[in-house]
Length: 111
Image (cartoon, rainbow, N blue to C red):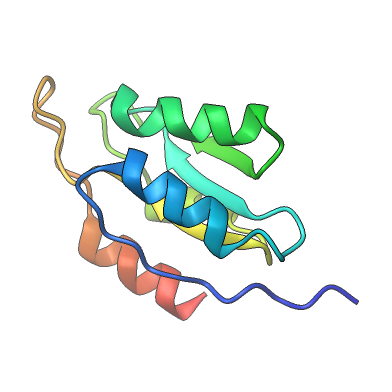
């Protein structure tokens, strides 16, 4: 049986630094899983793609709607027993979209 990975909340302004910590923290687990959105900036998306390309984790990218907002339900549906990180940028400076971070955090904690 696969033990359920302990879900960690990570808040960082620099996912590049977070990616290094992430890869060393979860190296002993079966392939960790990350959830992010299609609205993530390259500073987040690129390191996640690199981790996935290096086969250090699996990444599920959840789409945003026409307003640039991600659905809380879509985030929860994307989660797996091996999910260790949910990355959602709070606000998009180009579109002005503001994500429902409080609702997402609550749903992730309760999952």
